Image (cartoon, rainbow, N blue to C red; front, side, top):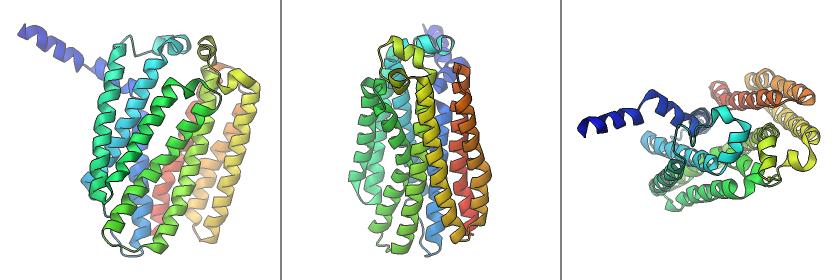
Length: 328
């Protein structure tokens, strides 16, 4: 019996099992979330506060817990989404389905419950340490939205896309909300810095929303076959892939114009390095995305576009470090 248990233990923690678990929770996406939160805190918030000689109020361990809690919620969301989308995934990517093959389907529900409970507890704890325990309700709201997305809105026209995009933009809002209340709890008065940081929150939040919206529509086109067989009403199914391409192009053009507006502000504030960075690392890929979307027809084309939007998102996140250098 002892030997059998040891064998089971090694099986659970085998490289293959860990790899399957990493795919289920979308480990690369979780790392992007963590990178975004850390860079926004230390690249933007800390850099802006430095000019008023104000230190960050949340200590390193508590901020790590905050990041960990958000990652847990995201992992729970991916798990429950795969649970409800199993039949669709078997049609769209039969060879790459983890749930039901490598990992029992019911385990996804277990992961969802454990991750969310732990995340919410951590959220209230960090909120309490920041001076406002009610901040923990943000975690509850995010959890509920991800649940509603998976069970209802994912298959509806635009609703699911909007929810995911809003949650993507909310990542930087969470970082600033907890830090702001911690600063207020410490008696800090930071009117000037607050206005500047709010500008960055709005800018990066809107950027994340737009890029996520574009990527979600691309993924809907890529998964159109399975969604259609399961009776979903996503944008490509309702209006067709060709018209959806034009929606993607329109959103991308809008993103380019919004970024131009930001770049004008950067030049006015003598932020030359971030201006050049956005030109090369974000604007050029955006234009390339427009060209490739116009030509896209096959499923492989949309898979490429999905990866391209992820590259654009990462490039946007890394610009936070460029701002940090420019501030110095």
